Length: 156
Image (tube, rainbow, N blue to C red; front, top):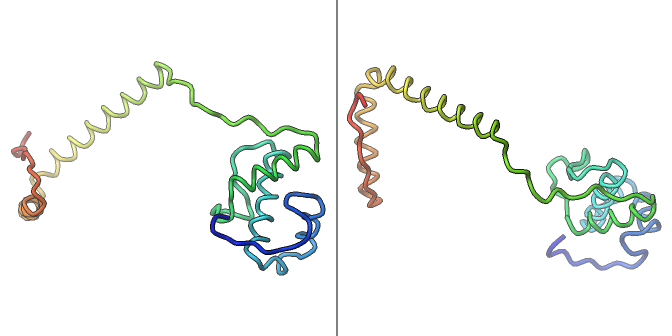
């Protein structure tokens, strides 16, 4: 909600009275940007407490266009107090990878490199003139940019 100036009177966000007021407006009645920011904040806060998720996704805001972390946090506190529940903890770090995971990634890297090398070996002859034209165009681009590139001879 950064950069949005809000002029209003009435119940403060977040509160039961404020939520009921927004709810009473209905979908067509929530025309002010501030109303939409608050409505979605209530949704995100409710999902954190009732659904016990930190995913911060919402079926009414698929692109997260109306997601404001601070408003959602305020609504989360409101619902936590209302329902006597605590939101799930925020995952602050990812555990270090296991040796098996590291080995798997290394095998994937090796397979990727082998596949690229096989592709190049198989298709280098078929490229012919097109490949030479592309190489010439790339050389010109490198010269224009002032970049030097080491070229690998065919067959390597």
